[in-house]
Figure 1 (cartoon, one colour):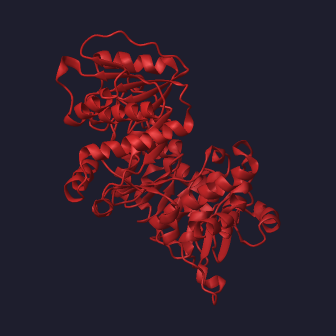
Figure 2 (tube, helix red, strand yellow):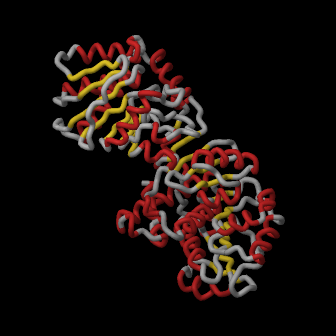
Figure 3 (cartoon, helix red, strand yellow):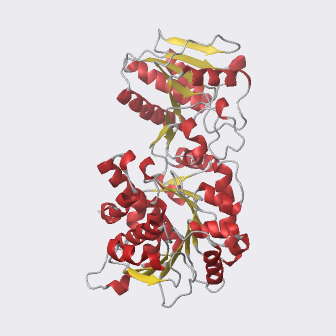
Length: 504
């Protein structure tokens, strides 16, 4: 699903109106119908509802929702903000007039100072104050109103975006001056802030409402941001040929593990095998021999000369994919081995966990990372590599910058993991759950990425489909064990089932 900027959404709106014979009022009616259906599916008519409508088309949406709720037997209290008496858009006026035609309704048009209504935790608040057209932070009385709503602990439903939030970048925004929605009903598309942890408390649960904007225009409009869904991954995954052998699916090398951290190597190997790599070899310290041969007998074992850490990463064979990092530690000899290897290869690599920590200790190594390599940091690892970031938004912007500068792919892990490509495009992963916040989960992901690279998928594609498969495996594990009970081993065990589920 594409994620568009505000300006591009406006272009799609205009195209739909001009070329498909749809009026702006009809689009507002479509929005209102969808919002109303969502509300009546969740709450009964006896719930107290307060509707706040602003002077623009977001307010028009809210007024149309109020009208439809009344027609369904609800009794909302409606406030329309028309400060000065001449601020309403043409559509907002029309929706106001249609609402007033219903007769005896609880309606207040606010043209100046007003007394805040009583709102309790038992209320449903419909937030239609300001939508995607907002250009400046809220000030004055609107800030007071927003804070009052937030402090009431009422259940808040925001139309399109929470009022006070910009639908693109929000750097420097003051969260308490933005509506804290429990449910955000976005029109047609998700918005970029929905993908970032900074704004989770503002957006709450979110859903998109399909109001049938021009499919042709949506397809033709380019964007740098995409939310990856099942159909996107299904189109890319290749079915296996009946007459094939393990040699057709690549040979992945995992440089992983050390004394006390051999579990990371196990999990990465299991992830790679379950994701379909033809052969998987683990290069690790000698102490890992019995552990790996007994726990992952399908993987080949390649011993380092050292008993407890990895001291040499030079290759003795040709591999289709090489992943380095899970559990290797940051001992000086391991760091030196990584440096020597980076300086000797120009093949794309998968670098994760301690490989990233090693590079952070010796930042000059960044310039030796081969083009199109995949780096898989979580937030702290990213900041150690590229400098402390204030928040998730600045971190994403920095990831876009450094991916282009170093010509690499960055898989920035999180709830909506962001796969940042060198061309500036960002693919957000939609699968997964909070149960995956568990030790070893990232090691499994490293193995899954390596498996797809080994099978011939391009690095950026491999990172994208691996993140989605990994998330689906976590969802399957959570179905069985609950989010509290998911372990990395459960995720690894469900990788094959996840791919099967996607390809059905």
